[in-house]
Image 1 (tube, rainbow, N blue to C red):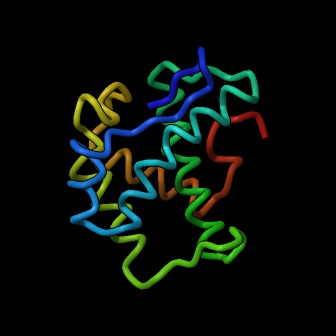
Image 2 (image 1 turned 90 degrees about the vertical axis):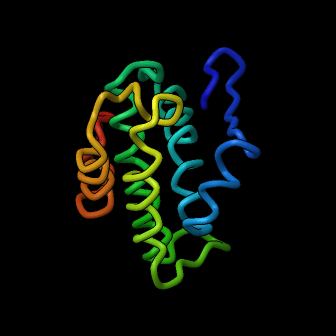
Length: 129
């Protein structure tokens, strides 16, 4: 979750990240990338609390993952299967109401947004670039 009022990112370790970790560590990273993307949107003066913002944030999580895979993020290295973990996170958890349900998209539509960010870059993510 992202709280614009306090500019805070949070996640539910007990009831979400521990379960997600069963998929893999990068599934957790994908789940955490979404509220950070909402925070980035807020810093850009863009909305962070509507379905369009969530769609953009999923795309930005894909863009971040591309940067990880291209070794542009210092101290973070991808391993085989990490993208599979991202996809599984979106397929299994993305459609849950308390995760990304407000985006009102199917799991496959969420994967498509993630893929757009990964393949096309930030310009696909509706942040004005």
